[in-house]
Length: 164
Picture 1 (tube, rainbow, N blue to C red):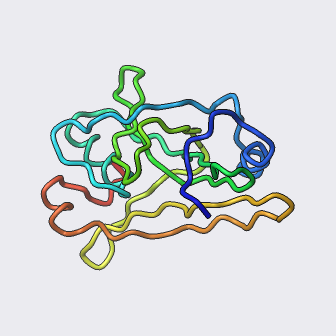
Picture 2: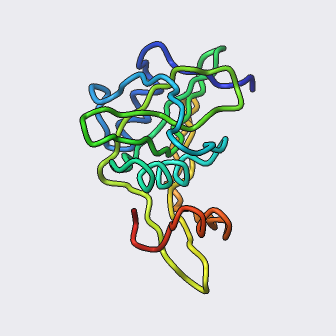
């Protein structure tokens, strides 16, 4: 399969994926990549990036899904993702990507959020895995996944188990 890209519109498979997740296509927004304020955001680490941004600049995390499609059509994917809300109504995607995408399609999901738990002397981030849709195939259930926050990052930015 070729690299995935930002969809230009919501079509059949994306619509089916949104219905499966219980989300409205009307809530989908296109967000440009915006630089984080005051720290070097990491590729592929949106939840940690957003928690750090909240510590440094206030605001709050908004959980949801990035929507992707295969350029050849058919396959699509929803990737659980966090963006930063600045407290003044602005919403920003601050996580750099390894590909050339500078604009992403994001749909908020108020029913599923990230959480931070302190266990065995380390902070653990709980989120959800990605889910893909192929034409004519059923959709699998969502799986919760766990990330360990590196000790140096945890200490530098005071990321504890309070969920902020």
